[in-house]
Amino acid sequence: MQNNRRCNARYVYSLCCIATLGGVMFGYSTGVISGTVDSIQAHFQLDPSQTGWVVSSIFVGCIIGSLAAGKLAEKLGRKPVLMLATIAFALSATGSTFADSFTLFSASRIIAGLGIGLAGTVAPMYMSEIAPASIRGKASGIFNLSLVGSQTLVFLVNYLIGRGMSEAWLVDEGWRWMMGAQFVPVAMMLFCTLLLPESPQWCITHQQGERALRVLEKIYPELNKEEARQIIAMRSESKNTTKGGNPLHDIWQTPVLRYALIVGCSIAILQQLTGASIVMYYAPLILNTGDMSKDTLLFQTIFIGLLNAMGAFIAMNLYDRFGRLPVMKLGTIGAIIALLLLSWSMYTQQSGYVAIGSALLFMMMFAISWGAGCWVLISEIFPPRIKSYAMGLAVSLMWIFNFLVTQFFPVLNEIPALQQAFHGAFSFWIFTAINLFCLIFLVRFVPETRGVALDDIEQLLASRMNSGSVSSSVPMASPATHNMEGKP
Image (cartoon, rainbow, N blue to C red; front, side):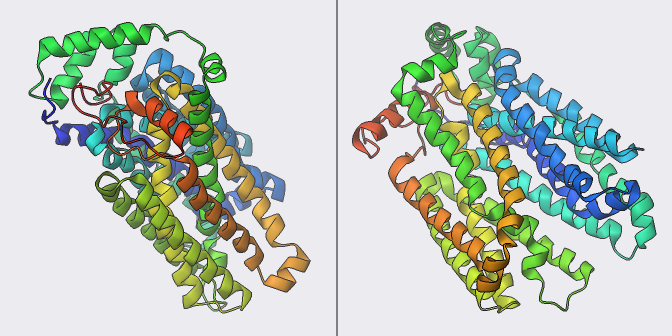
């Protein structure tokens, strides 16, 4: 095949947009609780521990769903797992909207977590496999954009539903309307997921070459069918040597796979340690200047989401042009500067525009770097033979550390001696140090994956292990060498 074969980018992006509806539900399901927790607490007359469970119960489902996602995606295929996630979201939306007890509401949130765990693992996996390497950064970045965009949308929806309404109405009915708004993206996901083809890479691995060819013909209108069949047959034969093998055994026996697993999981964990979730969840406390109403504070949190979405959009358009690492390094440096400004405003008790501006700058820098980059990297840094298992583990670790950070931040932040001495700045100095470590980690351990075929990722990682830098001999993706995640 010739190296100048063109792809149907519009078709690829349309598939990615459908797959990323899982990201929309991911963001919506996690964000919707922010505007409803007070009303739910009052409606069901919950004590503090039960209120905490209303918020955190979803993480239980997220962890279970992401751990199961890899094995299910390998056995059933990417599309069936996305359908399972859709069903979970539909059940959750129904249960949480019409729940008549705290138990039913909690169970519905756990089911939502299962859907998030499945979709959050399999959607970026599918998108990285369907997209040619030349546009894989932008295609994979659509997932993060949908996630943060839907979080911003749910902040706006909650605000519009609750604006000007009485407290009694919010307690009796308002929170149900906020939960019920999930039915719109659920219906879209249910209909559109039916239109998705299966991942060509999964089809090849499971000896369904003709099925893979039908998808690849749409991605590459100029595809030479006979040559494509030969390549598919060769790749099916080579992949069958590892199909059915134990990924844990392969990882244990192969240093480069261990390296891939450690680096990929570290990327997922570090994303949660940057402090972005704290700025997002505790935005009203950071933005509060002491003279703002609740409606004003809730409205200002929308700007946190908007800056996050803007950063995600910028990142997805830069990754394929300049590479993952340069953009992530620049964004991490910007995040460090923003955190220093934010912590300085807290330490000197200079609230107002400095706090607001630095929080907004941090969210944009995070979105450009670790917010978008994490999802792109973990979808492509794992070699194909361990990808399903490794992505499931990485996403589950992401959720575990998200839970730990959000649970222990208030404990650390409210230590009387630290609060009296530093006025809340101490916690953000810790996040600043972690972001500095993130920058060092990028420089030292993470390879540049721009334009590299997924089949060549293992060789790329071996080069990084052996020399400490990416070898120029690592082949870039071309139609003749691609691993069928997008280029034949």
